[in-house]
Length: 220
Image (cartoon, rainbow, N blue to C red):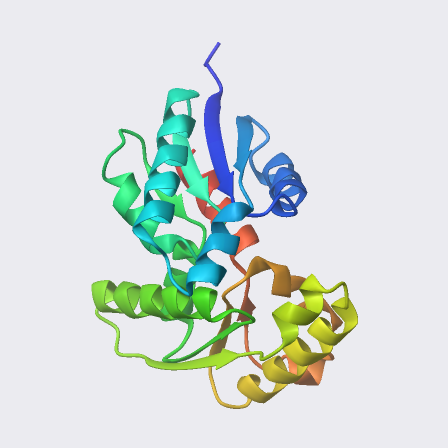
């Protein structure tokens, strides 16, 4: 009997553990999955206003921990620490995937005018940067439009999910009239997409979790 593959997931929010558990159960039934979660990483980025060398070292440490725990493959489910993930991946012996890379690749294939939307500047910049680099690798010429939903993240943190959803929905409607495809820089915004009317969803809106797990299903 073949030994089950092991997938290590590294999260910066415990709320993402059940989201990915469900997706992996559906799409990776024969893969053993384990989780490492530390929500102080993003807090540190927000306080510093950037990804610091210390945080990058900690991210590399989690990748190493996942490898030592027997992971055949590692995926990091947060876009804010993307650069640290890419740097840390070079130091370990198993493949490491940024959750937003398959989504970025799909966006580049889908259209020339790509919109990126986020509730945090620290998520917006790394995602936009990744899309630009993946487009360059694919040899595609793209136009990138970035949109920050001011105040939405703060509303969510203070327990006001309704205001968060209203702000995100308004931004999605506006952006959908300017681009060919929209990329959500944060997985937490995906539930808002479900609430949009069909006429407000004129273009494909991509969220990373499902696309990333579909991609993993092809490599695991």
